[in-house]
Amino acid sequence: MQPGGYLLRLLAQSAWVAGITLGVTVGATVGSTVALQAQPSEPWPLQMHATETTGNQGAEGHQGAADADSGKPIAYQPLARAEAPWRLCILYPHLKDSYWLSVNHGMAEEARRLGVGFTLYEAGGYPNLPRQIQQARACAEAGADALIIGTVSYDGMTPTLREIATRIPVIAAVNDIAPEAISARAAVPWRDMGAAAAAQLARLHPKGSSPVNIAWFPGPEGAGWVRFVEEGFRTGLADSSARIVAVRHGDTGREEQVLLIEDVLDSQPALDYLVGSGPMAEAAVSILRARGREDIGIISDYMTHAVHRGILRGRILAAPSDFPVLQGRLAVEMAVRAIEGKLEIRAAGPDIVTVTAENIRAYDGAETLAPADFAPVFAIGPQ
Image (cartoon, rainbow, N blue to C red; front, side, top):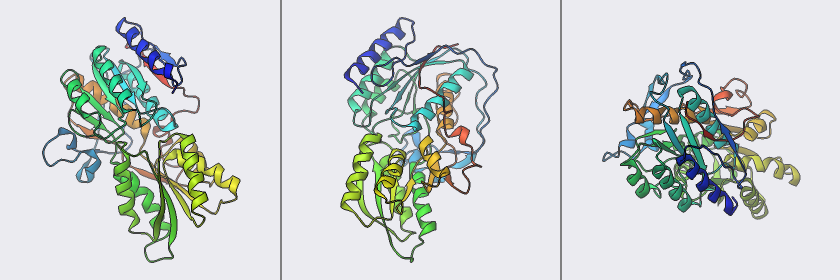
């Protein structure tokens, strides 16, 4: 993100205080600002069960929603409409890949349905914890009714969120986060996402079969989801004959992932698989083709638009979907519940589905991927 981007975001925040809703995109360009018309109060259908947990209460012994193996299936019934045109403030780690674009689509649709508004800021990447701290404080100072955060750090935001939680509800979205100060969490256990990627390797190369070598790209060190996805992946890998021969951490921007892939291919000639984040899988398709190494398989540990296309075209073997559009909807709905004192389920998320060439035309892509023509929505006026 260019240096001017954050300044313009602060200007946008000041404008919001003055009653004007503005949006600013990555690179200091003007983004989508939408004054959406009120829609019929027809709740969206939850097409699968969510997993109920109590890990976000901060109670002794709870380890957070990332450890939600004991959760139970529930039938989640969304609110029909907000009681008032609440103003939400939303923070993302970045908008470098289409995963967060899909989350944004779900949030925009749900804000429209409920009749609430929001202003969105993105930190520009996982290394930018100080920037996200500043953004969170600006949200509270600007008078937001609730804060929704996709965190850049598992516990780096905790002191700031403790302060903010004394004034407004804080809802965690997607990324794993320390339970302190969080009113609710819309997400899936990221251990299960890592385990799903490993399960695909175990299916192709069960334990006891000929060993295969993999390079593992878990994501940025210190990010709220990486340690959990890595734990799940390494645990699940024990059921396979796969062995990790190279590990590369890095932010989930395409440019950085290209450099990491090139480095691994140069240093590890005997590779059978590349496994890791959506942007890694996306970049790997063209790199392997250019190098004449299409014998190397690719597995993503989450779904993006390009990963979806890669599976359709037989370039990527598999990716678990955690239905980011639905998670975005759920985070906004939970925020409204928290504001209105109606919060009952404090940690929930969709069931994870591993998508392969065999089932890609059957799973619910509409709750996973934003429409092809969707542009980021940085602000919605309350209705």
